Length: 311
Image 1 (cartoon, rainbow, N blue to C red):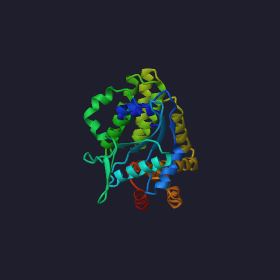
Image 2 (tube, helix red, strand yellow):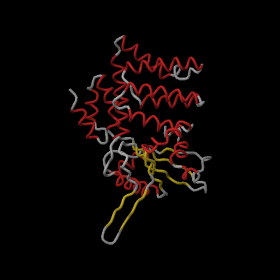
Image 3 (cartoon, rainbow, N blue to C red):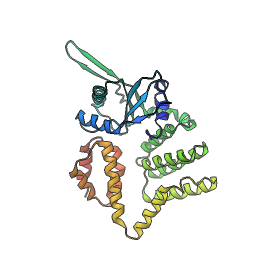
Image 4 (cartoon, one colour):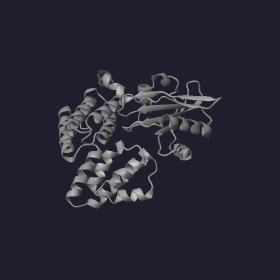
């Protein structure tokens, strides 16, 4: 979502920064450079989700360090890590850095926005802007009225938090959020993109997912907008189910293993091979549970504990 809608991300969360960027110039995501910086930092799991090269309106190049925290737990060393990544990136590129943080945890009082390093004669203070997604609970009507894709992202996140233990309600909210995209006149490709995000975040048990698929298909038929039901994703999903019926479990299992491993690498940093091998030994139902549990992991230790608790 960040790569697809980076301009919308900045305009939604950091409007004061928006006008300082020259949006007529190309935007470059520096994944390779980011991996090297986080590797050099040597402070545990990777926190930085994106490093983006943009141009300022005055024609100068600047680097934006975008940190999106999507875990549900507060972290005592968060501000320290933000500072470390900031100076590591500056040390590498010698360019101005904007360190931006999205706090998606469920602790309303956790708001780390600065880091202080103090000795007897010297004091260093590092301040960075934060966005607390829980604050948007009181702005729901504004979110519903907005056509910015990240208004949808925030709504999906909040409803997902609310329905951790109520998947039936999650299914209903998922349908409401999808219908909103059609009702507000989102473009076809935006609906498809946002559907992929919603479907990935608002996971459902198979029975409820089947109900949702049927309801969204019926709604598209009524609206005469066969956007989702005609996408490759649903075709692949139907093929997956048919493959299960024909006993084609091996291909499905491998695909899930690769997807889960990729998600864990993005969330926690590079997963070591012994853990990868443990994941490969999990049956399909356990892989699905792991896929749902990923968003509750803060460190590799959380993954290790989860794996050790499996029967």
